[in-house]
View 1 (tube, helix red, strand yellow):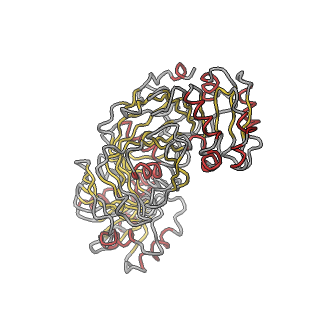
View 2 (view 1 turned 90 degrees about the vertical axis):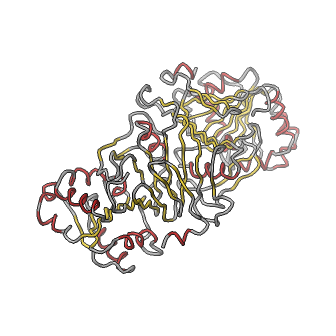
View 3 (view 1 turned 180 degrees about the vertical axis):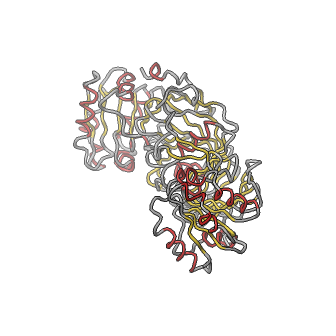
Length: 274
Length: 274
């Protein structure tokens, strides 16, 4: 459930920056005035990230961009860093390590200002690590391309802009079904959302729309009838029955509170990506 | 549903051949007398496969092995090849290309003899390509590590030793969720079964037991409420709602006809792997 009126655009990584730019166009479209702050905090080596977004957005008519980078947590307390958010209409978190975002800006004036912006209707977007950090409890590390084994997952508190869900990214590309199911097994109160590369969910109020070229997977453990996560020995493979999965592609929508998908004329996705 | 009384051991590839050999021990245990025929037909270059199984089985006390290889389909008609199955108690299909198995031995005296052996209670095992070929309709080719796109899957008739299911292997390791869901979307009559590496299902009558170190995934599309597979344009990502998924690990069982899993004391898997 979303804190406030501002939309969230949560991207599975590797969004197209050179061709149709379906996802970046949505970012530009939903920025209702004001500058876009490109937060490259997740990266240890941010040089180049900002420039690539500057070019990608310039070609589609969005030029008022500024980079927010924080090398050390102390900088998140500085008025200089905070002033970068003056006049901002939205924030876009680029990729890297989600733990850098939460540890560098968590509970600082910068985080507070970003929350205020969101509550006031501002756009918050994030890709890859910037997607994961949207969750209340976020996935930090866990095995890709293998089944989930008990004890293998590293989770941490995220920014919590989207509640009651846990996000994973680069989803099909890195074979992350196992770990997302493992995360949901810990507490099926959280709805698992796995987002492919060049794919995003646009969250408005309690509903999201899928855009981009891949799929978004919803893993719903509410009706699950068994899991061995609390009983099994570490390193044993997970066992979990009766998981409900939805595969959503461009144009499909999902009601988060009701946990129900709806198809949106997906035979004509271009009309939904404008 | 199984044709007959013989067990099937369907392995997701890369079964341990050097350490505990949980899966190969099951193969040896369920071979009720007679020799084991190692069918290396799936491979274009079978040299080495037989030798590796010969060593792996010898260490656990199974020494009466023979290799069945067919380079050209014509050889499947020869009495010499057929005679390799005389006195066989079981057949083990090694990995490679499942289309080589079906195209080289499909509708030949060799296939007929293998079916008869199975119906008479003989063991049939297969790993990787040898696992896929067990299905009635088998997966041949399709993208790994990406979401299923309409039109991307190559399916073909398999040996059909296990009916009403479609098998995929190297499942979590190669990120094959997307393609198995895509296969099931074509006709949810087929139950999708995805098997991890070093993991197997042991099918007896209408039920299977999971053994090995990974997981077996069941993708059940029976209650699915929507799919775009017939409407969508080629190359569009699949959309499919309300798929039921079960993640099974060592000791869990599954009733194929009833489509229901049961947990089998998975906190003590060793007792089930004997």
